[in-house]
Image (cartoon, rainbow, N blue to C red; front, side):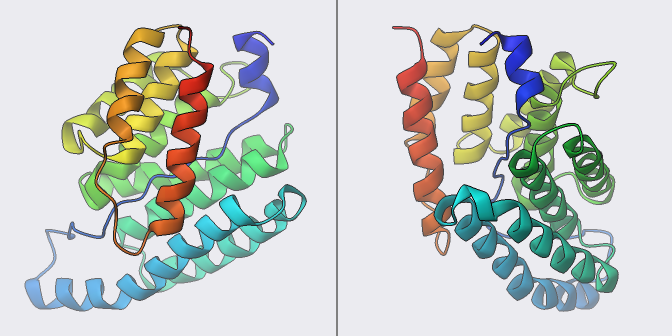
Length: 226
C-alpha cells in the first residue's frame, strides 16, 4: 500500500492525554479552582472510557461506543464551554470515532475534531501539556489532503514539534512524532523518538491507556526499516 493510499484508506484514531495540570489562567483563582474540581472527575471518566473502547472493545463495536462518548463530551462542554481540557477530549473522541467508522463520512467527524482542538488552543494552548498541538498535528498528517480533506504535512510537522517543546518526554507526543516521521520515510529519526517514548513516565490512573499506547509504539518500531 502506498503512502497516498494509506492516508485515504484510514483516518486513524489517536490518543493524546496527560495529567490535568494546566489551568485556564485568565480566570480568577477561586473560579479556576472550582472549574478544575468540577471537570476533573468527568474528564477522568472520558479518558478511562476512551481507553476501554480503544484497547478492550471489539472493533465492530467501537464506532457506536465512540458516538455515545462524543455525546457525553458534548454535554460536558455545554456546562463548561471554557474548559480547554474538555475541548481536547471532545476532539480526541471524534477523531477516533472517525477512524472506527472510516469512509468519506469520517471527514465530517475529523472536521468537528479540528474545531474542538482549535478551540482548545484559543482558550489555553498549554492545557494538558499541549495535547491539542499533538492531536491537531496527528490529524493533519492522517487526514487526506485537498481536494478530499484538510491534511497538510507542513502543518502536521509544525504542530507536532510545538507539542514536543511543551512536553518533550510525553508518551503520546513522542509516539505521534515518531509515526509522522515514519510516514515521511525518516525511519532513523522515527526510531529515536519511539525508543524515547518507551521511556516516558507512567501516568497514575492511566494504566490501560499507557499499556495500549506502549504496545502501539512497539508495533511501530517493528515496522521500521532496519
